[in-house]
Image (tube, rainbow, N blue to C red):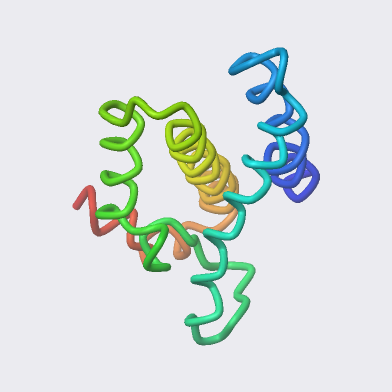
Length: 122
């Protein structure tokens, strides 16, 4: 169920965001939000490339707290509609990955204590 939820949020829920953002251009906006998934290209720098027990938030460069702060600042201060939509997509992506991390932490306490999120709060 975790995987289904994760990919539902990444691919389907953004359609709702696109629709609410601009009903007239929702299809184009959905494609733009899909393109923000390119933020996951930072995963190629991880060793190992894929670890199902690793929380990406804070671990990957474009998922770091500095990057997330940048996405928040962009969302609040950028007036250009296209750029604002991109920041919305990046923030929703981080939220989706964070939900995935919380789900994983509920099954693996050691995954939490070894995560970057744990270091942020302790």
